[in-house]
Length: 233
Ligand code: NAD
Ligand code: APR
Image (tube, rainbow, N blue to C red; front, side):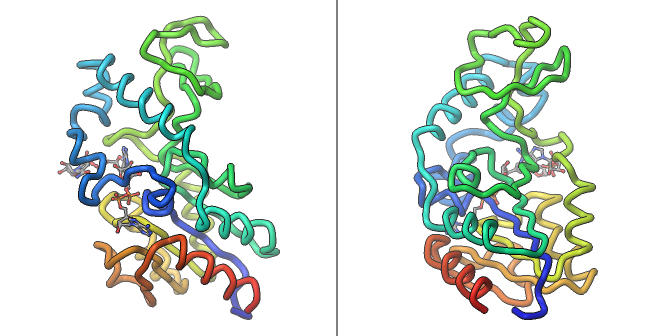
């Protein structure tokens, strides 16, 4: 690891699976229980806001009862101990990386724990419900929605992510199926820039063949092992 200084990590639902948060595409995952078109698009929100707000209120409530696991803890240790550049880009809308103590975290698909006012464009930390149409603390409009990126919307901070990828020596993807772009394309972007790539996932993902190395197993085992290698190695 002596030649590694700048690291970009991508995490997906798999890193939070062992905390008890359902993934999207595994058996029994969220997208088997709900149609994406009904709950995760701007069109769905315009058509049936109660259904969408209720879905996210339930997820926001559930997430707050969950705790970080050994994979989140290990990434927080890496964040604290790594002196080079590090960016943890997460597709997850939970706050388990932060609650484990990580600071260098970017939520490319937003977060359940903010409400976004579509009238004044202010984001407010939010732990309660939205179904009851609360007023925006900034402008008083009843125009709050979950601050999550829906299908058909642009993920957040893409310029910052691509800049970090271009400057990285190592790209690590953890617990993501590689089904959703643009995140699914980061591995190819990294390889184009001659960045070393490593996947840590329960099983082979849709993107496994693109990685220089792919290790399979639960995140709570693979991630602490890898972090030890990097910090001691
Ligand atoms: P898309 O699903 O590729 O989304 C377009 C953009 O929105 C992408 O940049 C994506 O990153 C972003 N995005 C928006 N909300 C997102 C979210 N919640 N999670 C992750 N990324 C999000 O584009 P599209 O045209 O809507 O769909 C393309 C194809 O993918 C369609 O055939 C659609 O049916 C299929 N699809 C499948 C699923 C699934 O979970 N199985 C989900 C959505 C779309
Ligand atoms: N340890 C490691 N990996 C795991 C574990 C585990 N304990 N459990 C599941 N996985 C792996 C699965 O094998 C799968 O490849 O995590 C991956 C989860 O994939 P998805 O459910 O597709 O989740 P993700 O890749 O994060 O989805 C991307 O799709 O709809 C959206 O917005 C949503 O951000 C999400 C995006």
